[in-house]
Image (tube, rainbow, N blue to C red; front, top):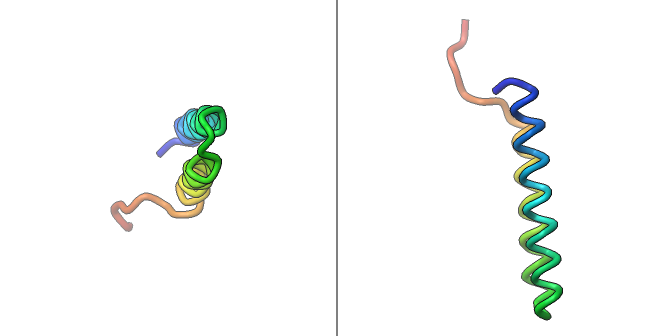
Length: 57
């Protein structure tokens, strides 16, 4: 995946995780919000850490 696509997907994922955390705290479910935000951070880290499978030359 090209770097600029990874950056865009990373930003969108982190924004959605932050919005999810905000709304869960707003409704009194902080633990659920922290799990969701942690999952968003984990997804971004794993996307940058592990390469896509593909052809080897």
